[in-house]
Image 1 (cartoon, each protein chain N blue to C red):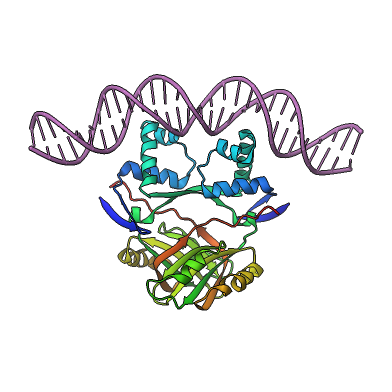
Image 2 (cartoon, helix red, strand yellow):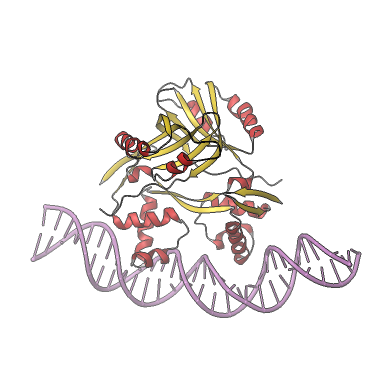
Length: 166
Length: 166
DNA sequence: AGCATTAAAGAATAATATTCAAAATAATTC
DNA sequence: GAATTATTTTGAATATTATTCTTTAATGCT
């Protein structure tokens, strides 16, 4: 039994091999239906349903997401920006403000630099400049920024490595 | 009508407001069923099904993914690593090799530095060191690395900004 | 071993997915 | 701008799946 803290909420769980298999299937295709999972695992659909519900309740499965082609929505420019802030340790004013910007997909508090690394998607470089001027520019406590433009993405997934049958 | 290139494959599409609404719903919860979407949009389920299929075929929807709590799989350490390589322009040997490592979730070819920015999840710092030694260490063409450890993640999503009703 | 708890199976019902022909819309052509 | 063609949507019928609930099996605990 493992115990850990997530966003102020205590969460408990213990996962077995069947759970791992379910997670593996769902991670690969979140629209796989219960009946198919049940068939694949040789179990009753009702049993799978139970387990999936539990995985959701236990915050093991956090959400189901449709990955959309950024180009289809004209968001072709991906950038990473290092942001140096004057946030005090423990505080996260700048981080929270950054997280509120829709184009900012990720905000990570990083070690060493009193700063954040953020991931941003905009239509193009103009959109990026606008964002930096209009959104970042309005946040109090940002000392400096360093922008890294992505030329091409070779891989972009969130599939976690799921432990193998031991 | 927009045309763009994706992974060597030409893709064409034109999205209307209904498509945007479907994408909005699916992005928020990829398990929303056709019937519900149909009800929400006041259309027949069969019509929604048609559109979703088309969005998949047109590579607008790339995949359906279950987001799993990294802590539940004991992958609590997130890091970003800058990798300087001797890849020639256009070539991507190092990038492709990096992409083959399961713990490497993202590989971005970045401007300016002849290098890549990768995103890595491991259980802990030991796992990270192992990965650098065993996986990165075996890749030909890596000149140097600079690792950034994430202390805390404030936001981590992939929800794209979907254009509003005009 | 016996009691308690949890998970799985199985059957029955409700709901959804999917298919397809017909009607409606939109787009194109002359 | 009327006619034609192509594309979408609807609506109904059928196949599949989701969901609930009871029974049975498995597991854990003292």
